Length: 307
Image (cartoon, rainbow, N blue to C red; front, side, top):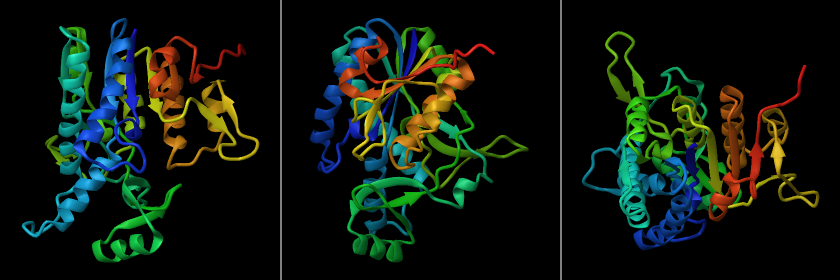
């Protein structure tokens, strides 16, 4: 079975943790164990988030006196793909001796006129108190919004249209390679209608939506979205909270999940199932093997109703 595994940013850096390299390495050790168990039986593509990492790089770039202007988000996204891809590749190499592992810097095509450029929604970087966030917004021209734990920077997040390197990823998979790609949703690029030339875009694409698109392009059988909760919850955070163990795309969309957390994950799962007839699931990193084998997580399946 061909599985696209989408790792949440919290799989690499938990909320409140210092963004030190050693901390991320320790978390990635857990990631490798979860993926290695699946890789013994299946073809695996790994995608990953980059919200904390790209936020850190953006702050460092803005504060660097040697620069006349901060680095654009597309190049910072490429840096995070290299950083996280290297950590994942080395750790998976150790966990899967003899297995071909490749970390690929990947570009994702977006439309230059996507309305997401005018309405930033994607959270990046650390959480700030409201007053600090407002001061940074004034000083640096940031957009800010309230997250579940405080205030964070938000950036443009256009809809992914195509993964530029999808054919290359397909060839690598066909040769038995475990591929790490589309980190942070991929480096956002637009294309010239006349020449086909690519240009970077000031944005961060949602990694779950890119993972769903890539899974579709690769004709994957299963989209596995891993996060820090065991499954999707209806009424999350309320006295009526209950786990959702099984849902169709339509049922999942009725949950009204927030954009900053479960919303993109549920939408990505729903899109993949609708467009391919395959299966998707959302659940906890440590239960990856159990989720694929139907013993944990929220399974998203096609509507089997016969008209």
